[in-house]
Length: 481
View 1 (cartoon, rainbow, N blue to C red):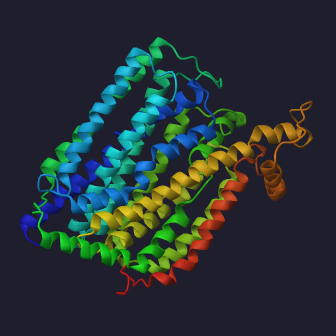
View 2: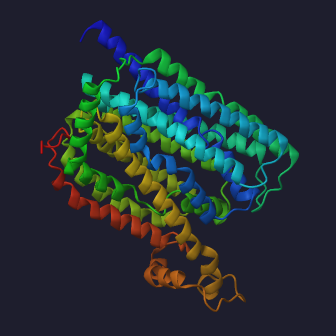
View 3: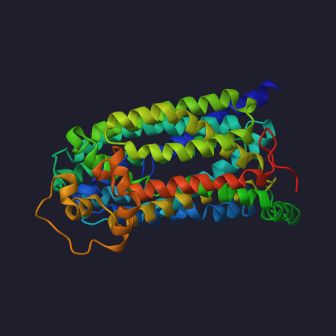
């Protein structure tokens, strides 16, 4: 490999890192995300169900990533299929952050709608940025045989950024809305002013994406000719006919569909996993998230260094079995100590396995349809995550802990004197399915999560039937159909 090629690879490593760093910090789920979550939950008094629905709606852009991939594959912008879209989308994101800051300074954010609407539009901008960046990653990675290495850098960087946003985001959230131990926080003019400053700070992150695309990418211009369009069409047709890629998509969906994760789990650990099974502080949650990200980086770096030595097919079987077992273990989460132990045991392995799936996806993208195919597979992952979050939020409301305490006061020793004649079909179903778990040390406060954890674990196990159908070789390449 020549010095020029080494220089291009190094610059692209920087580009991958920058894009994913901003993806974790510069969106409404990034640095400002912690503050937004607490503002929704304790400032506006929103339920887990409503928050989960909003999360699903604002992530719609990540569901239609294949459309963005198709657009960038087919429609060069000023001669480029990738980086000019990064310039456009991140410029819009800067304007959106500035508009949100202006509304906060004016004190007009009295409902979730302003933040939700901005989140939806910004979601489209960052989803498009992600798609074109991944398209560049697949093109460059296949050219130099670095798909796994580039993704290891991407996901290591995003975990580093999550560490930063977890701690700094919690500090900022506590600065805006200090812990009071109460379920509702009174919003004041000071609260809005500090929110505005955080939104203003977030507007600087998309600038990094613009700089990275300009300085660290070496994309060749594509002239829009009939010959080039015919080549792209041929690549897309080939991708659509690849049955094994569709099977990979089903496998990714099954592994990612986890209704207990996200908002329901956040509500449970926030309200019941603190000292004395009470409220957990924002900073405790932040340090936990930081530890989870740090330990996951070990898995990413391990894949970068030794991923090529692993038999991918055997790894996938192992990952499904491990996911099935660990899902059930989360039934015993009752304190922050438990969460730290689980993160230490399974975090690195989980990150290693996740990168293996992403590497398989990148390796099997047809030429000239990289944006569409990789975006499609990532969209399946996002759809599964959003759909499971919405389903989990709805189910959590149907079988929440408050009904358990009220309906079965004698079992838990508190709430005596309160009765409910008809707690609901879903609660009754959940109780009949999971009441025996109480005999094995499962917390009474876990009642709302028990069926969700079980559903997620069973779906994970079911994906094992897809592995032999993909016809993978040891390196993760599918046999030619």
